[in-house]
Length: 202
Image (tube, one colour):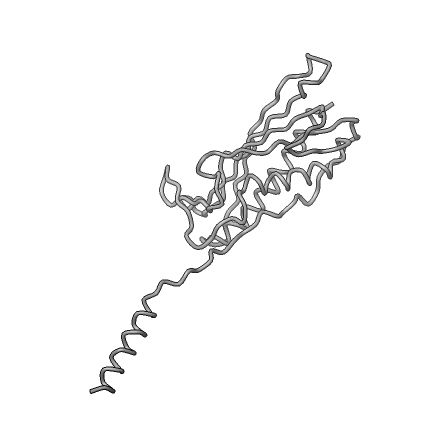
């Protein structure tokens, strides 16, 4: 009887352990890809301030967004971004602009010095769209370039805004394939933003 009771007790312990949920850390993906080629331009004796970016609510998170139904956004359960995409894009944007050699210096907020130009960026959209064939990543970034308030020439204080889009097909319907496509889309958008900033600074 004692041996039988002990066996039942051990079985209960094993059963309880098998029902304990196991925490699985989500896979983390990065935006790291820079443009292969960036056109250079004559250097201005000016500082460009790249301010902290903002993002639309569905994308102001480390969660990786996708859509498998129209007008709906969902998030992967096992994969996420290592940082908010807007923050990762800011670092890539600064490095891309540095490669143009357009400005004497490029600063990021918070910044207490003076700057001739200010660049604001907003992540409007970054999601994997599974409603299309092939599935694709949709990336949209809005930028505003303006002269700083300290500029002595009021006529040059206008703000120039533009929206940049990239659509990149996925090699597979998976979160990892989406991260690869997002990097390719980001490189294209960064190229376009750098060209825009160079063309509208003088």
